[in-house]
Image (tube, rainbow, N blue to C red; front, side, top):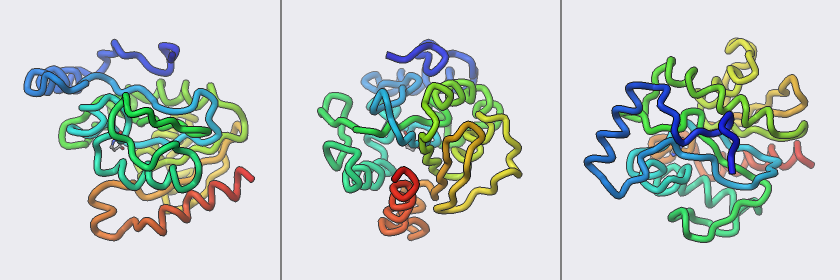
Length: 212
Ligand code: URA
């Protein structure tokens, strides 16, 4: 489905991440443990950019934010705003469809401790850049967290200082797309109240107000 510039299942560019995926696959043979492809509409008006697959979530299931705590609020909110056919994403074969929305990650492989290095983020960035470039003017990019926000800026060759990350902030992009940034819907952010369901809904209201 994806051209190799957008997603390459065979990608082995990051030695640390490859080695880690091999270790994880040995320990958990049923886990997907490969680069996780984007999921959703072929022709989205909203592209959600996460950070990277979680060990027992996207890395296990093979679908972004699926099995990850972070997916609970994300898929519920996508459903509430009419993008999802169901409020939960359980597995690649659960029949969930996203309409008008696609989810991708700034880094496609599981990083140890959920922390990709700067070099790994850069190594994966051409895939994100190609995915963004393949989408039309008017597309909204929802960056979840500061790393995704910075990865989107990098994908455009923009200086990180050109748009400081902030929750529910809107940044016009040079090719007629728009980035909206949000705190990541991670377990930590949700459980500490840094990101509430109401705050996340406000981000989607912002997106709706832009997309008209
Ligand atoms: N799972 C993903 O696929 N991405 C994230 O950013 C977090 C969890």
